[in-house]
Image (cartoon, rainbow, N blue to C red; front, side, top):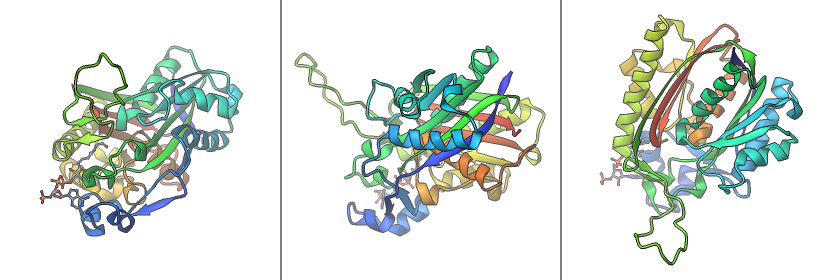
Length: 318
Ligand code: UT7
């Protein structure tokens, strides 16, 4: 037994920050951000925590799935930016929606939503769950250095959610982890221990942009091809790819290398920026709600990021 997606939801903060708004904070401009990243605006929290956004997305997904909070057997939240290490954001969502099931967080940066789906698949396979709520929720505005133009222009805040039920949509998956803290690193606050001797690190996103870019394109192309080959499929069999929205140029290059036209990729980076673990969940929600993904479609979700991790999942939409 695996799962199918019964309903999806999302939440983004009301506050929109445009590229022009950012040019008043750091030395940047709309032309650079649009051409090099593809972002025109991002939604930024003014008082919503990651748990608040996760809760709002969860409520929408539960309503779409026609599933009540009491029916849930498990809540998984993928996040690297939540305000509390403990309780897990999933525990706060559990309380906020009135569920009583097990709940825990998964930390796998931008690929986190796919890691959470993979974990959910194991619970279905083991017969341990009939309904699972999976969420990607990030307040990346908490983790970027707002004085550092190469990172603060990229990220946005938001949450996306999916309610899973028994089914056979989840067809195959591929996950790759190459432990590395040099290409992308988000250190935690180092604490105030009087005994700690090493240099404290800044608790902000640090990223080697070009290394990440190359890693992203390579892993997307490799992971999509792996899923196709393993399942005896060609790109013609895939209705659309829902990729992590990190940089429109990454998606464009992957599209060229794969030989799949850009219009087969779901893209919303211009409106939301890179929302890390929420990105694929938000893009999936929009594709489902707009009718772009329909019953019988084969869909590939793919993501990459800190870890370094990459992931792709093949869904036969039911
Ligand atoms: O979700 C996690 C995974 N993350 C990613 O996939 C991100 C992958 N990487 C990227 O998307 C790109 O590498 C960035 C968007 C981060 C950077 O774009 P880039 O084309 O690789 O630029 P760069 O870092 O090579 O910088 C080129 C120039 C530099 O100036 P000089 O040295 O050539 O004079 C930067 O200082 O662009 C400058 N620059 C900016 N200029 C205006 C960097 N950031 C900005 C900015 N506005 N915001």
